[in-house]
Image 1 (cartoon, helix red, strand yellow):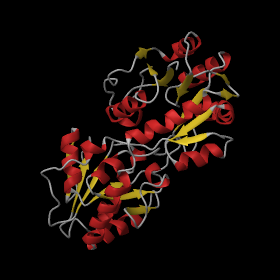
Image 2: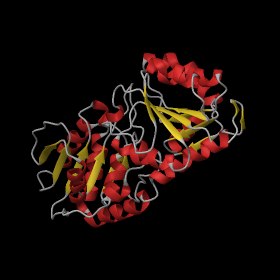
Image 3: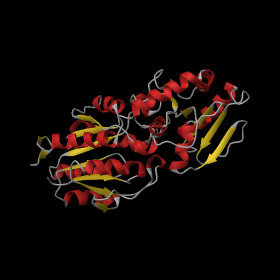
Image 4: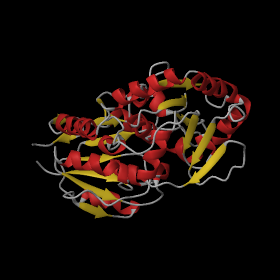
Length: 352
């Protein structure tokens, strides 16, 4: 089979294993155009055995047009990489597979200007691979027909490994994220004040570049993966209080997968993709609260602090649920999409 060109900005360390799993299923070649690290994930080395091309975004069209590929895969990263890849694939009659993450359209000028192109891609792409059911519903409403879900995954073996940490006698909540408005830290801090848990002996730990001075709030800075895994193991609940902004709605939130692997319960807002996409299930492995509502978040925190047995049960359920979100399942979805479109499609015909 001819190789499939997979166009993306970077290969974050959290995604390297997924690309390695995909390479075991179909021949792929990565085209990396760099740019801003999406969602704060640092770039890692490409997986062994996967050919890599480095190109500027403006060179992506020529790369597609000059290659001999079974299909082309691209997502929404970058400003011009996606349209150049789409147009070049159409000109060469190569099947184009769109990797979709959005489940709510940003209300910014660039996205509004791109809306006609996006409608064309949703409607005419040979296949669309999504982050989860929430994204699948979004693209289906915009005309997509052949849709596959590639579940967001982390290295479950690493994140579930035993640690020397354990949960203490006092309730501990954990926040892991950047100091950006969309991550909802301000909402969480308001909720923490309202909850009164600090005065009752509970603690809130903030992992990341934060400088907050509040009673019972501990800032631990940036953590390496081993350190972060230990904090998940020691926390009763991970809180993901993301909010919707004009520019951003959380596509998923891989910290959910990481924490669940350590049997950590989750409180997520309904603006978190992992909640909308079905991994976080209200009353089963965590709690889902309305975004940007500190009172509701405070109530959820108090509920778990008052019933740590229920909190532990959520953690056990989450560990079982996240075990199905694997690199293999992610790779299977892309391989199925490629195999489906590399026959006769509206975008052209490619022989395996």
